[in-house]
Amino acid sequence: MPAIRSTLARRGIAAAVALPLLAVAACSYGSESKDDSSKAKVAAGSKKIDGLDSVKIGYFGNLTHATALVANQKGYFQKELGATQAKYQIFNAGPSEIEALNSGSIDIGWIGPSPAINGYTKSAGKNLRIIGGSASGGVKLVVDPKKIKSLKDVKGKKIATPQLGNTQDVAFLNWAAEQGWKVDPQSGKGDVSVVRTDNKITPDAFKSGSIDGAWVPEPTASKLVAEGGKVLLDERDLWPDKKFVITNIIVSQKFLKEHPKAVEAVLKASVDTNKWINANPDEAKAAANKQLEADSGKALPAEVLDPAWKSIQVTDDPLASTLDTEADHAVKAGLLEKPTLTGIYDLTLLNKVLKAEGQSTVDDAGLGVK
Image (tube, rainbow, N blue to C red):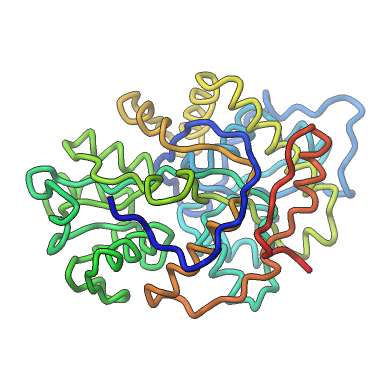
């Protein structure tokens, strides 16, 4: 199987908690998560952190953001924030979450690598920092086996990606270029047709035959398989150690500077949640699906949930060297000018938490605050 060629040096990545998870269907833009008072009770004697009434946390309604979903459902965020209320906002697109972070509508968010890179570069490095990792993997090329029987058969076909310039779009364009195929990055026209399609619509487009396959995250990939599709390629197989960043934790630089104790509390909750997920995989899967149902009104059926769950790993490590490589892929695809990413990471508080937990610290691949 052809592998993605990286022009950037690989750096060692510290070991991190890892467990199969899934990505689930996105919810409505900027919707408020339903409050569950049973899990949001504040312990007697708790005090507000940094004097804050609340900390506003954003995430997508998919389990590539599983840490946030499970931490919400099990009350880990509220436990660490004490009398400071954890508030939630649900997104279905990276640009809208970056906009919310910039406006102060959220303070901390779970987000994919491409929106984080774009947000950082467009603000000339002034709006956000990546402060931790959350997930790796969970992306597949699923095709109609009647039309596409091998990787070379993808040429000349219509392949969906979620959005122009999003993480999966960049990955597919890079992979297509590795096959020697030419595709215009903006129009998607060329040796293979790239059809930008919302993940909510992709299964219907696949079922109708208007697309021949899709390079998509879970659970969209497993939904396509349930409709008769076949996994032709798992993106994990294109990366060293089968690891690449799919979700980061970001914070506004203003909030990080003014409220470091609150940021540390959220990171402590994230690390503790990942540890609990690792120790209780079946309960974690149920908790994640329960929060998905609370946020979107619909849980995933077992035939989609179970296979999707196996393809994602939660991790405290931001896998910084792979973000650097993903940025390089976007440049090669013609979707991004060569970015200056130095300073995009500040892993100081995460490493403080990991040390206190007796876990290995993680590396920023030379892209941290100097």
